[in-house]
Image (tube, rainbow, N blue to C red):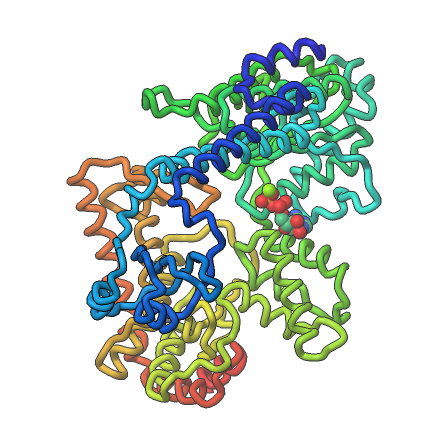
Length: 624
Ligand code: ADP
Ligand code: MG
Ligand code: ZN
């Protein structure tokens, strides 16, 4: 086996093998040679007086010496003057002094009858300059390269291997530690946990399954948006299953040299085979598992392709019953190569979606266990205020709450800390010292009340929870927070439209009160355009296009970029329809506010004074 490796090394050995004592001696020898040649040339290439000791003097001393006739030779260099003069003892001595822009110098030197010359940089010593600009850097690179190579070899653990030996796979093997994660640490995600428990169970008692003839899936792919706990789930599996757990990230296979990523895959599976039963986890598998496209010749990524091919080959190679289970995670499943997903490879796909209301509450509670929390905290309210947040964001909210409690000098995290940190995570920190003119504050008040009032006057829109005009670090000058009563998975066309009307409410208020408009609505505009577009291109909510899909989401879990798949003429019509919806919504918002001018003024004045009002206060004034 060891021999095998060495043969392999030699093929890739680019003369950088430094661990071999023979080679090391040779390297030292070359370096020494180069150095002595350099010194030798240096000595001869420079003017002779340069090799004597040099003394630095002031410019006035230099002029003085010129006038007394001590100076015999002057060389004007790029940024200094080198000159030879007789010193007090009567010996010739080399001096240098700074170069000063002195127009009289030439006359002075002529008067004193001094030979002087101006240095022409490249002519001074061509050999030296070649040495400095070419040979030295080359030597340096070479030295550095071999040093790095040596270190790499050491890190890869291939003692006998050389700099480029394809050592171990780099996978981290988890041994069950005291702080190991278990399924208890993963809140919600019940389906995912169930699927993974089965795997753990299989590894513990394979006979139960084999008796019936059931084979365990070879590969399990965890898919879902970032921060939903995919990596956490895998670590929990490692903690639950009493078997070795190899963990490696897809990016670790990405190597500079063709063939090396593939070698890592090979090593990984060799190790896994020796340790079976075991689990192999490849995080962010999309880095190596991207679709292979043969379209771009020359520009294709050979290295990545080889790595993927090796992975496919290895997956086919091991028997399901041997007890190696492959786990992988990705947030871009649509970019994976089809070959990876076919039966016999990653044949089970476990969705790890954003948590629902119950899931969010559970996640908040799991993370709260590590903090000193006020016993009266209402996690349900926080969970309702964070629709769409991932597990990672929820963990962050709890931590921000903890930080805030410390800042405020409290001994436990309170409800208000959590509510403030929800806003921090959504909108950024409060900008306490932001200077906003009274006039701007007034505009912002009207803008926010505009949103809130339009929301309140429409049926089926989420109740207003809080309105504030305290500026945030994200750039928001204020915002209106609405919280849905329960969990919503479906939205009607009317609800979507009402949301767009609510978004238009801010700008509408500015218009009818001040008769002018500001830049403050840019974020509203972005959101309402997106929603109106989705209604037409993806939700089939327009009469013209019926149930036709016009846009496809290319990146469901990452921002949801879309791509259009219709003719240019149709695209134009889509734009027109989007515009129609927006115009309609804008008009409706203006109409609602126009009908409620009194309340608009009253509420805006109240908000301007209070800066933050709750939904209850808002409703009290509205219904008074
Ligand atoms: P992913 O790999 O899906 O991008 P991670 O597993 O790295 O996400 O999650 C990041 C962090 O978010 C975790 O370490 C954990 O603190 C928190 N988290 C995410 N989902 C959950 C969950 N379901 N339960 C508890 N914590 C979670
Ligand atoms: Mg992850
Ligand atoms: Zn707004």
